[in-house]
Image 1: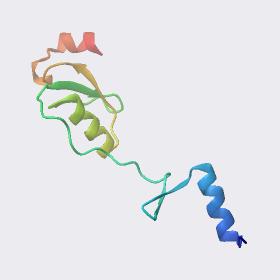
Image 2: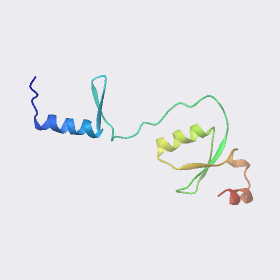
Image 3: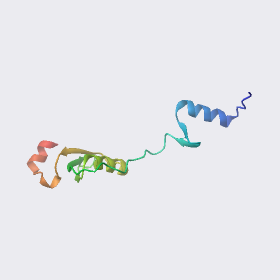
Image 4: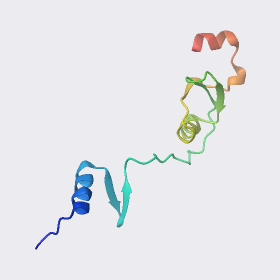
Length: 98
């Protein structure tokens, strides 16, 4: 069996060996592209208050899963500071949390 190794085949082989390209059902996908964000969370409503460490904004989310989806989709860095809605946190409590 003779393998014809052109420049394109060599580059493809190197990429596969390095894990840069993968195949799924015959389709090529680059692993270095944008990451896929989840778009479904389990049913459940456990409100959390989160702080975006980059811009200092507080925001309430229906759950920690919803917060993670939002972070992924909008490239934010919200982190949970309380297990309740932000509207119910006093300024004094907030100073202790952050």
